[in-house]
Image 1 (spheres, rainbow, N blue to C red):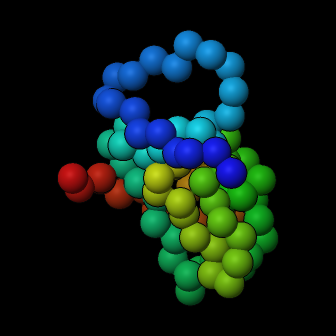
Image 2 (tube, rainbow, N blue to C red):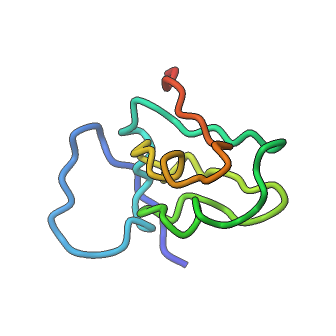
Length: 89
């Protein structure tokens, strides 16, 4: 298992590779929140997440260490079970 690295805001990754090596969640200004009552476990959010930040399970969860807040999961959810809210630091 590789050691996780934290990046400073505005950091540049100059080598190709997996974002699994870096905790990139500190970059977001909005975060997705899953309403477990509306979620039907369809997997659309998991399938479309470009950062593999959705964790399958009952209920589905967001790994905020890697979520950049792009909102694709909320946009793709057919049940409107994911809401984007302002990130509070």
